[in-house]
Length: 126
Image 1 (cartoon, one colour):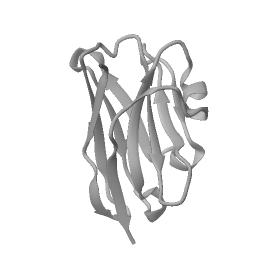
Image 2 (cartoon, helix red, strand yellow):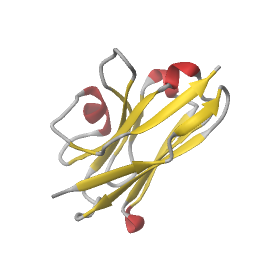
Image 3 (tube, helix red, strand yellow):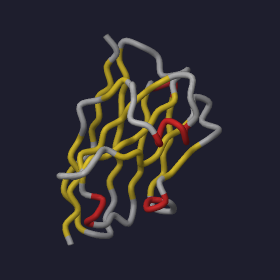
């Protein structure tokens, strides 16, 4: 069974930073496109940022461009989402996901079927 485990969420003040991590176990991430999604209460899950398997291509949702940075370290089987200048509207449960044979833009535009982590809560206070 493929497993993804997120960590790094928490409570932060507006303008602060958090770094989310997504560690894969029982398979290698090398060939997978990785995405970070979020779901706020009462809203649909949305793609925030996605990165290609080769790390050569990335996609960002407009509202996080210039504030969030996605990266991956295939040697550590881990993906990251560095979130800076956080805003209250970034508050959500953040999920990482993995899939093959797609592009970052396509992955972030759709909702599956992907392998999903369990999510980590990010709360930004004003």
